[in-house]
Image (cartoon, rainbow, N blue to C red; front, side):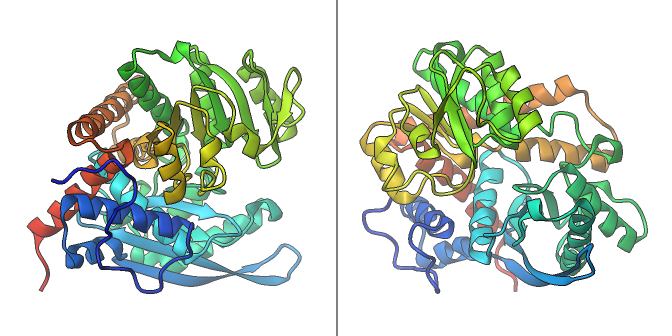
Length: 435
């Protein structure tokens, strides 16, 4: 194995995907990361091409009859990037900017993520280009059921298992499960994860991604002789992941000094009262105008003088324009793909330790796996059992990534990708090509 300390290869392999993605896009970032891992591992062009190319994908029309009687049309996608290690696993995203390239990138990251935390899954992802805030609950149900019907040949408890993502939730998964089950003639809880407890969901699933972020942050801090109670934290994105992460950080003694959402951000250098903030957001729908805090923009939040920065919103926020201003010692990626290749290079230059998304936010898919196992055996574990298993899985994965990084002089991102890509490639090579 050759060694490197950069996040982009000095002499990239000759393979370049046809129809190269837009520079700085999520897919471009995913391809750059894979190219680095392929170079470190010494893979040839054929294997690199196989690892970069989705196994299968589908683009479907999703018509909706609105409550007013008007008919509108949306576009939906499902991509299975790789299934060498097991069935596809990945979320369903509802967002107006969803397109097939974004879904391809997210599916690729899911492949490496599942491999890094040693799950028997491949990577998949789905999305519908819709802004869920502009539609009624009944309309979203019809969109979900139509989308599920259209992609049904691709999904199943042993082929491709969906979960919530941006713009979707446990109720969305219940609709997917019911639509799939009705068409099969019997109830199949394992076709989705992240569903309500009443229909086979798992305890601990709603906060799993956030808990995983805190576990790996704790492990990274421990290597520097620090504890969670020693650090200040800023979190960009106060949705399902960021809000629960703030709660857990605060409960474990960290000083959460700034948070933001799509409407703006707030800061208090003495530490925000997170329980009161959660009540404020529940009441108003935003962190903005929270008492005892000053306003801060999303961009300003990224440059605050804190110990730990958690980008937990959308892709690409740490790029060539913003990453150079980061003052945090650790960046722990709560979102998928928040750092571009150019941003990575700047963070490395400034000695910022990045705990990458394929490791940091893997807690959600870990507990999704637990939910899938429980559904298949129709036996449910206690919340404490799940919490203990999640912590063990995350700490073990971090230790493996950190050990490789130190041994081979790699960044944590490169080490995580090398582990994930190697496990997928080895499974592919052992299975062989058919025919």
